[in-house]
Length: 205
Image (cartoon, rainbow, N blue to C red; front, side):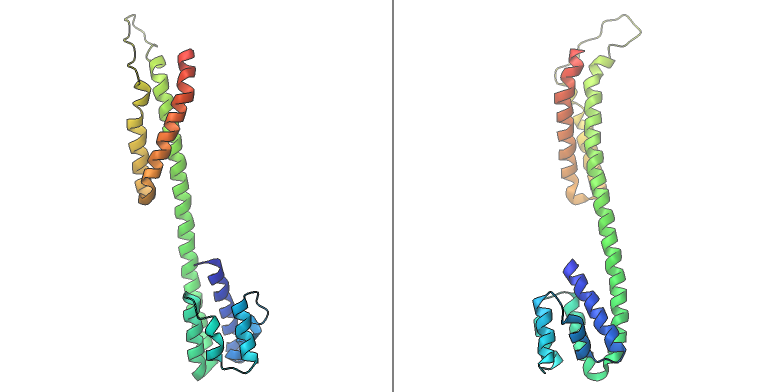
């Protein structure tokens, strides 16, 4: 739900509270929307003040979609029978709906945080694996025997890609299957950057 939709829902809740106190649905709509910065909401209040029926006046606000449109249509329909009771019922439904929306938004934020963390871990995984691969020829020379070691094959520093890229892919599959390839690409890019800048320093030592 967009921020504009949430603002509209909050204004409709104010309409319900005013109507539940016995002010009347049309008067509550005018009181809530008369000073609005949104043109269609001001037009609705102006049409009511000019004497047009509530059902006809809210046409500009019901042209789009969304939950606020459905709630407004429900209020207009129920106001024909018992406006205060309709407002109290709609207010309870809206409160439940807003709690559900907030919970959904919190889950979405948590999911995005975990996705960002997975990308960071993938980059770190690629960098650390590249550093270990670049250091492997140097570490292999530290031995206690006097036997001569064979030289490391050319391109051995890139063998770590076979560990880093699949690991980042499975990490991405766990947190966000749609972005698993992105995790692999970031891990591979971090690996190549570290090998490109770090391996020459190791060979120069």
